[in-house]
Amino acid sequence: MSSANSAFYKKDLLPVATFAVVLLTMPFWFKFIGGYSGLDTKIVIWIIFAIGFGILLGYMGFLSFGHAAFFGTSAYFTGLMLLHFSANILPAMVVGIISGIIMAFIIGFLTLKRTGIYFSILTLAFGEMLHSMVLSTLQDYTGGDNGLTGLPTPMLFGLKMQGDNVFYLTVIVAIVMYYIARRIIRSPFGLMLKAIKSNQVRLEYTGVNVARYKLLGFVISAVYASVAGSLMIVYEPYVASEFLSWHLSGHIVIMTVLGGVGTLFGPMLGAAFMLYFENVLSVTMGEQWLLILGAVFMLTVIFLPGGFVEGGSKIKKKLMGGDE
Image 1 (cartoon, rainbow, N blue to C red):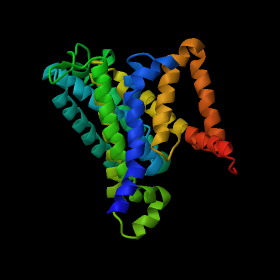
Image 2 (cartoon, rainbow, N blue to C red; image 1 turned 90 degrees about the vertical axis):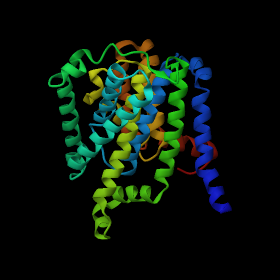
Image 3 (cartoon, rainbow, N blue to C red; image 1 turned 45 degrees about the horizontal axis):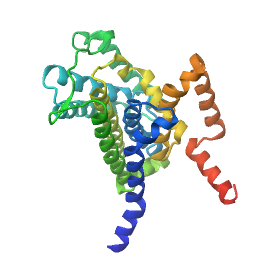
């Protein structure tokens, strides 16, 4: 029992505590690197999204180009609940997240029958179908191109969810979600996800129900996207149609690859970098920031396939005098 507790403290408590300290102190140090109030909340929301996507891509080996489907579905249902039911965020977020989970079961069941590029294209197709429906068939409910507007100020236990209130709510959720992700990855279920990435066919020959593990892994990833989508509406009470677009799906892919696939820290680092780059550094770079970002992405893929995490490991080895 003592050895198990020791392993817990070393492998889970310390990283989670460090993560919590960094996020909770963010309003104090973020301004010294050019950040501003509100951007820190947005970064934390995208970090939640990136953690979930990192589980799917980094540990299960499935690249989805349609994860905006879950982010956007949750965002729309959260917004509709706030608009037509109550300004209380609890029922709104519950309905939003459940809607994203249901959508994940449907899309996962239909797309996970394929692997590789076929899976990726299928997820992209489903994501674009939903985006098209929002702009046409469902525009009476979604607002079409204008998005879902006129939402009331979100409330929680009588508190207006604005400014610091939203930030600390988001941070608490992020800490919990990060801890859960760590426990998932180190669990027998997480080992199954890694085995699927390694050799799915061989795993099937052992009698494992691979389809069930793939679907559950896909849904877990979608839960993180759904939580992020719901929190985005609490942060900014407006649902944009872009929340379902392939651009948003592409953003999360770039963030994950930049940070480092195969880790939980990498996607979080990539999300923070890209949001900071887009909202702070782009101010001094002007319209050329996308060109620079593209160059950074290209160089990372070519020279650092493991992303920023690999770069950090190489720097650490050099500083410690280790061999390459």
